[in-house]
Image 1 (cartoon, rainbow, N blue to C red):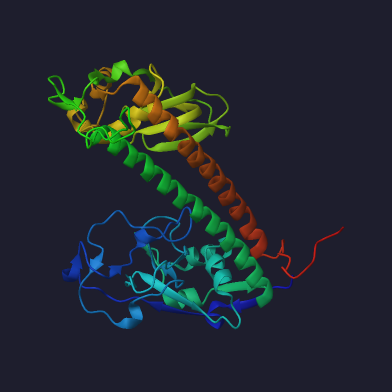
Image 2 (spheres, rainbow, N blue to C red; image 1 turned 30 degrees about the vertical axis):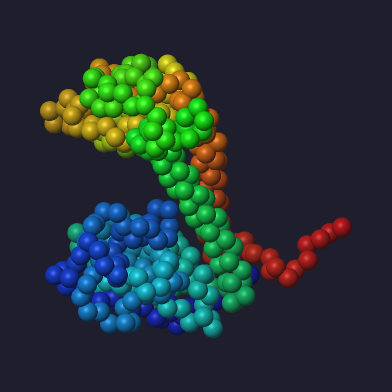
Length: 406
């Protein structure tokens, strides 16, 4: 595949966004201002920005700064190392305002395929040039002119389209899996809420328990009404807590290592295998995790074993309703002890209801795990393919070629 050398100025237009006055920032509205938090610089692409609550803009804005679905954007400021050169595609027309830290990239599609452009800009060769030319202040910056001055090597338009489409198809599958997982997780949370907060689990006739007028009784320990036949219990009645410990081997393996911040790395042996709720011991005390695999936890985490079948899922979703700050025993760094966890009170449903909850959620959680593995594999495949496709070492066969060898 022949590659031709271009300056990006021959292929794209780059426009800086609008300066938006802070007096018009709002917590709700019709138009949302784009920030650097909308770039998923690790996974790639566009993401919701959950770090701010004043993202809406209610002031006047020129129409050309209101972006459309499929528009390509890139940061002009690097608040996080590796951010410069990232790209994202706008997901919805008429919703997002291009702010001054964000550049709009408009390719000349007679020479430069839009999808190919989207993947070329975050490639290693472009990012290296951006890093070399960025203003070396505490927070690095670039400009539209610097971006246009970069040098790239691209194939003919037909090859660009094939490469761009392949990579977009991989990304769409990743996005679809993530959306399925979000929906499954929402379903699980909603089911928990119906059954164990609103107490509308199915009664013996399959009807919602509380809404159908079934008996509720006062529980003195919990200071609330609960369904008849249910009781108060402590976490120690559901789970056995084990201490995580540091793993000295830093080699890559197959078993995940979890800390209070989430997945840390992989090692070649495991601390526990099976269904477990991971409970933070230090640090981010609200970062509870459910796992059902062979894993390792470091000393900032507790892992648990089930005393009662189905308890792991039940306690995991119950923990969303616990005010963990009430149990914090740390004087500086937030900390928990196993004694504090064991003493947490919970509603104790009948064993049949816990078992049914477990049976319903098990295939959903298995599907989530399957999708996560597929996302990981597809992301790895995309990462390995990207440089090979961009430098011409690998080409994509046009769809019109008939590969049937029979």
